[in-house]
Image (cartoon, rainbow over all chains, first blue to last red; front, side, top):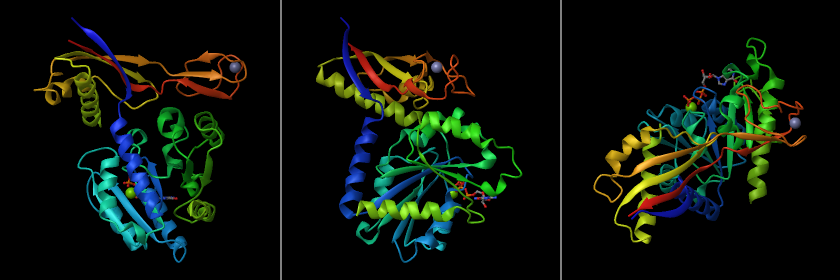
Length: 220
Length: 113
Ligand SMILES: Nc1nc2c(ncn2[C@@H]2O[C@H](COP(=O)(O)OP(=O)(O)OP(=O)(O)O)[C@@H](O)[C@H]2O)c(=O)[nH]1
Ligand SMILES: [Mg+2]
Ligand SMILES: [Zn+2]
Protein backbone atom coordinates (compact mmCIF):
# COMPACT_ATOMS: atom_id res chain seq x y z
CA UNK A 1 0.00 0.00 0.00
CA UNK A 2 1.30 3.41 -0.92
CA UNK A 3 1.12 6.24 1.58
CA UNK A 4 1.82 9.88 0.85
CA UNK A 5 4.10 11.54 3.40
CA UNK A 6 3.83 15.33 3.37
CA UNK A 7 7.19 17.11 3.57
CA UNK A 8 7.14 20.72 2.28
CA UNK A 9 10.84 21.39 2.66
CA UNK A 10 12.93 23.74 0.56
CA UNK A 11 15.19 21.70 -1.71
CA UNK A 12 18.29 23.68 -0.75
CA UNK A 13 17.49 23.56 2.96
CA UNK A 14 20.83 21.96 3.84
CA UNK A 15 22.74 24.75 2.10
CA UNK A 16 20.56 27.35 3.82
CA UNK A 17 21.42 25.86 7.22
CA UNK A 18 25.12 25.96 6.49
CA UNK A 19 24.79 29.54 5.32
CA UNK A 20 23.33 30.42 8.72
CA UNK A 21 26.35 28.79 10.36
CA UNK A 22 28.75 30.75 8.17
CA UNK A 23 26.91 33.90 9.10
CA UNK A 24 27.22 33.30 12.83
CA UNK A 25 30.92 32.56 12.42
CA UNK A 26 31.39 35.90 10.63
CA UNK A 27 29.19 37.68 13.15
CA UNK A 28 31.04 36.43 16.16
CA UNK A 29 34.36 37.48 14.61
CA UNK A 30 32.90 40.91 13.84
CA UNK A 31 33.38 40.59 10.08
CA UNK A 32 30.96 42.22 7.67
CA UNK A 33 30.61 40.34 4.39
CA UNK A 34 29.29 40.81 0.90
CA UNK A 35 28.66 38.35 -1.93
CA UNK A 36 29.27 39.89 -5.36
CA UNK A 37 27.43 38.20 -8.20
CA UNK A 38 27.32 38.99 -11.93
CA UNK A 39 27.63 37.48 -15.36
CA UNK A 40 31.11 36.56 -16.60
CA UNK A 41 33.06 39.69 -17.44
CA UNK A 42 30.64 42.18 -15.87
CA UNK A 43 33.51 43.57 -13.82
CA UNK A 44 33.44 41.83 -10.44
CA UNK A 45 37.21 41.66 -10.10
CA UNK A 46 37.63 45.14 -11.59
CA UNK A 47 35.21 46.55 -9.02
CA UNK A 48 37.14 44.83 -6.23
CA UNK A 49 40.43 46.17 -7.62
CA UNK A 50 39.03 49.71 -7.61
CA UNK A 51 37.42 49.33 -4.20
CA UNK A 52 40.41 48.00 -2.23
CA UNK A 53 42.69 51.05 -2.55
CA UNK A 54 39.79 53.28 -1.49
CA UNK A 55 39.34 51.23 1.69
CA UNK A 56 43.02 51.32 2.57
CA UNK A 57 43.63 52.57 6.13
CA UNK A 58 39.88 52.34 6.76
CA UNK A 59 39.10 48.63 6.70
CA UNK A 60 41.04 45.40 6.76
CA UNK A 61 39.73 43.38 3.84
CA UNK A 62 39.84 39.72 2.89
CA UNK A 63 38.73 38.56 -0.55
CA UNK A 64 37.45 35.12 -1.46
CA UNK A 65 37.32 34.46 -5.19
CA UNK A 66 35.22 31.74 -6.73
CA UNK A 67 36.05 30.51 -10.20
CA UNK A 68 35.72 27.27 -12.04
CA UNK A 69 39.51 27.23 -12.53
CA UNK A 70 42.68 29.40 -12.19
CA UNK A 71 43.77 31.79 -9.42
CA UNK A 72 43.89 34.85 -11.68
CA UNK A 73 41.21 36.75 -9.78
CA UNK A 74 42.61 36.09 -6.30
CA UNK A 75 46.02 37.24 -7.55
CA UNK A 76 44.46 40.42 -8.88
CA UNK A 77 42.78 41.06 -5.52
CA UNK A 78 46.05 40.46 -3.66
CA UNK A 79 47.87 42.86 -5.96
CA UNK A 80 45.19 45.48 -5.39
CA UNK A 81 45.84 45.38 -1.66
CA UNK A 82 43.65 42.70 -0.11
CA UNK A 83 45.14 41.65 3.25
CA UNK A 84 44.22 38.09 2.31
CA UNK A 85 42.98 36.61 -0.95
CA UNK A 86 41.76 33.07 -1.22
CA UNK A 87 40.82 31.34 -4.43
CA UNK A 88 38.15 28.67 -4.45
CA UNK A 89 38.11 26.56 -7.59
CA UNK A 90 34.71 24.99 -7.91
CA UNK A 91 35.93 22.42 -10.41
CA UNK A 92 33.04 22.91 -12.78
CA UNK A 93 30.33 24.12 -10.44
CA UNK A 94 28.59 27.21 -11.69
CA UNK A 95 28.28 28.90 -8.30
CA UNK A 96 29.76 29.04 -4.82
CA UNK A 97 27.81 27.35 -2.09
CA UNK A 98 27.87 27.53 1.68
CA UNK A 99 30.15 24.49 2.01
CA UNK A 100 32.78 26.10 -0.21
CA UNK A 101 32.64 29.37 1.70
CA UNK A 102 32.98 27.49 4.97
CA UNK A 103 36.16 25.91 3.60
CA UNK A 104 37.53 29.35 2.78
CA UNK A 105 36.57 30.80 6.18
CA UNK A 106 38.52 28.01 7.84
CA UNK A 107 41.66 29.23 6.09
CA UNK A 108 41.28 32.77 7.43
CA UNK A 109 41.95 34.22 10.86
CA UNK A 110 38.69 36.12 10.84
CA UNK A 111 39.60 38.30 13.80
CA UNK A 112 42.10 40.07 11.49
CA UNK A 113 39.44 41.51 9.15
CA UNK A 114 36.61 44.01 9.09
CA UNK A 115 35.23 43.15 5.68
CA UNK A 116 35.05 39.98 3.62
CA UNK A 117 34.36 40.37 -0.09
CA UNK A 118 33.28 37.21 -1.88
CA UNK A 119 33.45 37.18 -5.67
CA UNK A 120 31.05 34.52 -6.89
CA UNK A 121 31.42 32.53 -10.10
CA UNK A 122 30.37 34.53 -13.16
CA UNK A 123 26.80 33.38 -13.76
CA UNK A 124 23.41 35.12 -13.68
CA UNK A 125 21.32 32.13 -12.70
CA UNK A 126 22.75 29.68 -10.21
CA UNK A 127 24.45 31.82 -7.54
CA UNK A 128 21.07 33.34 -6.65
CA UNK A 129 19.85 29.99 -5.31
CA UNK A 130 22.80 29.25 -3.05
CA UNK A 131 22.98 31.43 0.03
CA UNK A 132 26.46 31.76 1.44
CA UNK A 133 25.70 33.42 4.75
CA UNK A 134 27.12 36.81 3.82
CA UNK A 135 25.42 39.93 5.16
CA UNK A 136 24.61 41.48 1.80
CA UNK A 137 24.25 40.27 -1.78
CA UNK A 138 25.43 42.63 -4.49
CA UNK A 139 24.66 42.27 -8.18
CA UNK A 140 26.76 43.92 -10.87
CA UNK A 141 24.99 44.60 -14.13
CA UNK A 142 27.12 46.05 -16.91
CA UNK A 143 26.13 48.21 -19.84
CA UNK A 144 27.33 45.93 -22.70
CA UNK A 145 25.21 43.05 -21.36
CA UNK A 146 22.12 44.91 -22.50
CA UNK A 147 19.10 46.49 -20.86
CA UNK A 148 16.89 43.37 -20.95
CA UNK A 149 18.75 41.37 -18.30
CA UNK A 150 16.28 41.99 -15.44
CA UNK A 151 13.56 40.50 -17.63
CA UNK A 152 15.63 37.46 -18.54
CA UNK A 153 17.16 36.75 -15.14
CA UNK A 154 14.48 37.80 -12.64
CA UNK A 155 15.73 35.41 -9.94
CA UNK A 156 19.07 37.15 -9.72
CA UNK A 157 17.62 40.67 -9.68
CA UNK A 158 15.05 39.78 -7.04
CA UNK A 159 17.29 38.57 -4.29
CA UNK A 160 19.97 41.25 -4.06
CA UNK A 161 20.45 44.10 -1.58
CA UNK A 162 22.33 46.47 -3.87
CA UNK A 163 22.83 46.84 -7.59
CA UNK A 164 25.98 48.17 -9.23
CA UNK A 165 25.61 49.27 -12.85
CA UNK A 166 29.14 49.02 -14.19
CA UNK A 167 30.82 50.26 -17.38
CA UNK A 168 28.80 53.47 -17.62
CA UNK A 169 31.75 54.86 -19.60
CA UNK A 170 30.39 52.73 -22.46
CA UNK A 171 26.92 54.31 -22.48
CA UNK A 172 27.72 56.55 -25.47
CA UNK A 173 28.74 53.53 -27.55
CA UNK A 174 26.22 50.84 -26.66
CA UNK A 175 22.45 50.98 -27.06
CA UNK A 176 21.12 50.72 -23.50
CA UNK A 177 17.74 52.14 -22.50
CA UNK A 178 18.30 52.99 -18.85
CA UNK A 179 14.61 53.65 -18.15
CA UNK A 180 13.61 50.24 -19.58
CA UNK A 181 16.30 48.56 -17.48
CA UNK A 182 15.26 50.43 -14.34
CA UNK A 183 11.56 49.63 -14.82
CA UNK A 184 12.39 45.92 -14.78
CA UNK A 185 14.55 46.32 -11.70
CA UNK A 186 11.87 48.30 -9.89
CA UNK A 187 9.29 45.53 -10.33
CA UNK A 188 11.64 42.80 -9.22
CA UNK A 189 13.32 44.63 -6.39
CA UNK A 190 11.47 47.83 -5.45
CA UNK A 191 13.68 50.56 -4.06
CA UNK A 192 16.93 48.61 -4.27
CA UNK A 193 19.95 50.88 -3.79
CA UNK A 194 21.77 51.39 -7.10
CA UNK A 195 25.30 52.54 -7.94
CA UNK A 196 26.00 53.48 -11.57
CA UNK A 197 29.76 53.57 -11.95
CA UNK A 198 32.77 52.80 -14.07
CA UNK A 199 35.46 50.53 -12.70
CA UNK A 200 37.60 51.80 -15.55
CA UNK A 201 37.41 55.59 -15.11
CA UNK A 202 36.52 55.54 -11.42
CA UNK A 203 33.38 57.61 -11.96
CA UNK A 204 30.77 56.80 -9.30
CA UNK A 205 33.21 54.74 -7.23
CA UNK A 206 33.06 57.03 -4.21
CA UNK A 207 29.31 56.66 -3.72
CA UNK A 208 29.76 52.90 -3.76
CA UNK A 209 32.71 52.76 -1.35
CA UNK A 210 31.12 55.28 1.01
CA UNK A 211 28.02 53.13 1.17
CA UNK A 212 30.12 50.05 1.81
CA UNK A 213 32.05 51.71 4.63
CA UNK A 214 28.75 52.89 6.14
CA UNK A 215 27.42 49.34 6.04
CA UNK A 216 30.47 47.98 7.81
CA UNK A 217 30.37 50.72 10.44
CA UNK A 218 26.66 50.37 11.16
CA UNK A 219 27.36 46.73 11.89
CA UNK A 220 29.98 47.41 14.53
CA UNK B 1 24.80 23.29 -13.92
CA UNK B 2 23.97 22.37 -10.38
CA UNK B 3 21.57 19.53 -10.96
CA UNK B 4 23.91 17.27 -9.00
CA UNK B 5 23.59 19.23 -5.78
CA UNK B 6 19.89 19.51 -6.29
CA UNK B 7 19.60 15.77 -6.85
CA UNK B 8 21.64 15.05 -3.73
CA UNK B 9 19.51 17.43 -1.66
CA UNK B 10 16.25 15.93 -2.86
CA UNK B 11 17.58 12.47 -2.04
CA UNK B 12 18.74 13.50 1.46
CA UNK B 13 15.42 15.13 2.27
CA UNK B 14 13.41 12.19 0.96
CA UNK B 15 15.44 9.53 2.77
CA UNK B 16 15.30 11.44 6.05
CA UNK B 17 11.52 11.74 5.93
CA UNK B 18 11.04 8.16 4.72
CA UNK B 19 13.04 6.87 7.65
CA UNK B 20 10.98 8.93 10.07
CA UNK B 21 7.83 7.45 8.55
CA UNK B 22 9.26 3.93 8.82
CA UNK B 23 8.95 3.37 5.06
CA UNK B 24 10.49 0.39 3.28
CA UNK B 25 10.51 1.93 -0.17
CA UNK B 26 10.06 5.34 -1.79
CA UNK B 27 8.07 5.04 -5.00
CA UNK B 28 7.46 8.67 -5.86
CA UNK B 29 8.80 12.11 -5.05
CA UNK B 30 6.66 15.16 -5.62
CA UNK B 31 8.46 18.40 -6.33
CA UNK B 32 7.05 21.88 -6.73
CA UNK B 33 9.18 24.19 -8.84
CA UNK B 34 8.28 27.78 -9.63
CA UNK B 35 9.19 29.51 -12.86
CA UNK B 36 11.27 32.17 -11.08
CA UNK B 37 13.04 29.69 -8.81
CA UNK B 38 16.21 27.86 -9.53
CA UNK B 39 16.42 25.90 -12.74
CA UNK B 40 15.74 22.22 -12.33
CA UNK B 41 15.11 20.18 -15.40
CA UNK B 42 14.32 16.60 -16.07
CA UNK B 43 18.00 15.63 -16.01
CA UNK B 44 17.55 15.27 -12.25
CA UNK B 45 15.73 12.03 -13.01
CA UNK B 46 18.82 10.88 -14.89
CA UNK B 47 21.19 11.68 -12.03
CA UNK B 48 18.76 9.98 -9.73
CA UNK B 49 19.55 6.59 -11.20
CA UNK B 50 23.19 7.11 -10.14
CA UNK B 51 22.74 8.78 -6.79
CA UNK B 52 19.86 6.81 -5.39
CA UNK B 53 21.31 3.41 -6.26
CA UNK B 54 21.41 1.13 -3.28
CA UNK B 55 18.97 3.24 -1.27
CA UNK B 56 15.27 2.65 -0.67
CA UNK B 57 14.63 5.46 -3.17
CA UNK B 58 16.39 3.91 -6.12
CA UNK B 59 13.25 3.21 -8.13
CA UNK B 60 11.42 6.39 -7.17
CA UNK B 61 9.76 8.36 -9.93
CA UNK B 62 10.20 12.11 -9.71
CA UNK B 63 7.10 14.20 -10.39
CA UNK B 64 7.57 17.87 -11.22
CA UNK B 65 4.73 20.24 -10.57
CA UNK B 66 5.70 23.42 -12.38
CA UNK B 67 4.20 26.67 -11.15
CA UNK B 68 3.93 29.41 -13.73
CA UNK B 69 5.17 32.81 -12.70
CA UNK B 70 2.44 35.23 -11.75
CA UNK B 71 2.44 38.94 -11.14
CA UNK B 72 -0.34 40.98 -9.59
CA UNK B 73 -0.98 44.61 -10.39
CA UNK B 74 -1.07 46.68 -7.21
CA UNK B 75 -3.20 49.26 -9.03
CA UNK B 76 -6.08 47.23 -10.52
CA UNK B 77 -5.37 43.89 -8.76
CA UNK B 78 -5.23 41.92 -12.01
CA UNK B 79 -3.09 38.78 -11.84
CA UNK B 80 -1.22 37.90 -15.02
CA UNK B 81 1.65 35.94 -16.47
CA UNK B 82 4.30 38.52 -17.37
CA UNK B 83 5.49 38.85 -20.92
CA UNK B 84 9.16 38.07 -21.48
CA UNK B 85 10.13 41.63 -22.16
CA UNK B 86 7.70 43.68 -20.15
CA UNK B 87 6.39 43.44 -16.59
CA UNK B 88 3.76 46.18 -16.84
CA UNK B 89 0.11 45.31 -16.16
CA UNK B 90 -1.47 44.22 -19.49
CA UNK B 91 -4.74 45.88 -18.53
CA UNK B 92 -4.12 49.24 -16.87
CA UNK B 93 -0.41 49.41 -17.93
CA UNK B 94 0.66 50.20 -14.37
CA UNK B 95 4.27 49.33 -13.55
CA UNK B 96 3.48 48.78 -9.90
CA UNK B 97 3.22 45.03 -9.89
CA UNK B 98 4.31 42.33 -7.47
CA UNK B 99 5.40 38.77 -7.99
CA UNK B 100 2.77 36.52 -6.43
CA UNK B 101 3.74 33.07 -7.72
CA UNK B 102 6.81 31.35 -9.11
CA UNK B 103 9.29 31.26 -6.21
CA UNK B 104 8.39 27.71 -5.15
CA UNK B 105 11.27 25.27 -4.86
CA UNK B 106 10.44 22.40 -2.56
CA UNK B 107 9.91 18.74 -1.93
CA UNK B 108 6.19 18.66 -1.37
CA UNK B 109 5.71 15.00 -0.42
CA UNK B 110 6.93 11.48 -1.01
CA UNK B 111 4.99 8.32 -1.79
CA UNK B 112 6.21 5.40 0.26
CA UNK B 113 5.41 1.77 0.86
N1 LIG C 1 35.00 49.97 -20.43
C1 LIG C 1 34.99 49.34 -19.27
N2 LIG C 1 35.50 48.10 -19.15
C2 LIG C 1 35.48 47.51 -17.93
C3 LIG C 1 34.91 48.14 -16.80
N3 LIG C 1 34.99 47.29 -15.75
C4 LIG C 1 35.62 46.18 -16.20
N4 LIG C 1 35.91 46.30 -17.53
C5 LIG C 1 36.57 45.30 -18.38
O1 LIG C 1 35.74 44.16 -18.47
C6 LIG C 1 36.51 42.97 -18.55
C7 LIG C 1 36.09 41.96 -17.50
O2 LIG C 1 36.36 42.49 -16.21
P1 LIG C 1 36.56 41.58 -14.93
O3 LIG C 1 36.68 42.49 -13.77
O4 LIG C 1 37.63 40.58 -15.14
O5 LIG C 1 35.15 40.83 -14.90
P2 LIG C 1 34.65 39.66 -13.91
O6 LIG C 1 33.20 39.91 -13.69
O7 LIG C 1 35.51 39.60 -12.71
O8 LIG C 1 34.86 38.38 -14.83
P3 LIG C 1 34.87 36.82 -14.39
O9 LIG C 1 35.47 36.72 -13.02
O10 LIG C 1 35.70 36.17 -15.44
O11 LIG C 1 33.44 36.38 -14.42
C8 LIG C 1 37.96 43.41 -18.42
O12 LIG C 1 38.51 43.50 -19.72
C9 LIG C 1 37.85 44.78 -17.77
O13 LIG C 1 38.93 45.62 -18.12
C10 LIG C 1 34.34 49.45 -16.97
O14 LIG C 1 33.81 50.07 -16.05
N5 LIG C 1 34.42 50.00 -18.23
MG1 LIG D 1 36.54 37.96 -11.88
ZN1 LIG E 1 -3.40 46.94 -13.59
